[in-house]
Image (cartoon, rainbow, N blue to C red; front, side, top):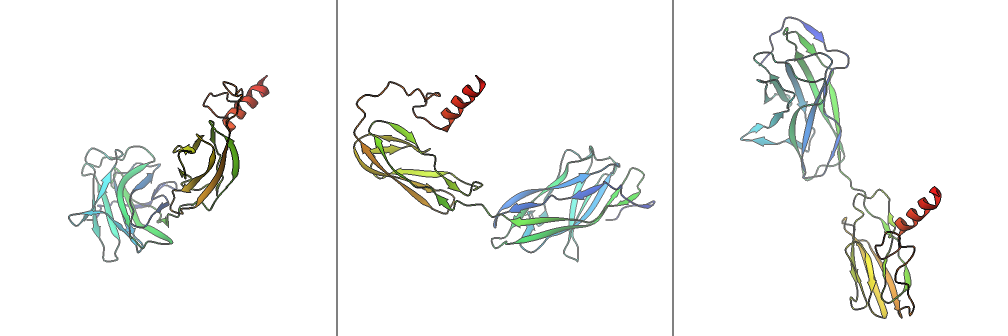
Amino acid sequence: MTFCLLATLSAAALDRLYINDFTISPGETMTVEIMLDNDSTYTNLQADIYLPEGLTIEQEDGDYIFNLTDRKGSDHTITSAVLSSGAIRILITSPTLKTFSGNSGTIATFNIIASSTFDGSKTIEMKNILATDEERVLHYFPNDTCTVTKYEPVVVTTLTTISCDIPQGVKVKFNVGVTPDNAENPTLAWTSSDETIATVTLDGIIETLAQGTVTITATTTDGTNIAANYVINVTEAQQSQPTSNPLDVDGDGYVTTADITMIYNYLLGN
């Protein structure tokens, strides 16, 4: 398929058809957006997409699946074909020369699939990007590239461990140190070695029930399986305990940094 031309021009300086850089995990399928930024108005678009090794576009019955967004006109359609160069050419056409709405945003989407061995950093190229306007004048867009990087989650490398004495019949929550701070999944799984001595909730709240020594274990859930053991010696219950702790300002049954922050802000404001 070819466009009917009256003239050829370079597109406006800010006009661009492109794909934003993204990360993907091996074996993952994710939706990719084709973006159109345009100062001028256009009715038809063409682009050749060159995929690197390890990436493919989802197909149905042997055809690549591309979907137009609500920026299309009433009769726009999108088709694709494989060129001898290996590129996938997409054509967005309107028989009645309807223009695309808006001046920026997603014009089409497709699902891209990463192979199970996808690794490193790859480049998707978009070349031969052409558009026509309402006068059937052809406009050339600059070539563009998109960097695709293998998703590498930041994992927990260390946990802070402690040993301590805690009286029977109290609740306490440890603020566990997770390194690095930007770990993708800092969630921990909590267990008690003896639930008759102390129990622990899913979010790490420990309740001491009887005297004795118990080990509370926090284990990472990001696949690293790093564990930290908190050896607690549960001592005799305090004989004289106030009905409530004046520092427990949020009333959750234990003192945390949230209580201290609230007290500090109150003092600062008064």
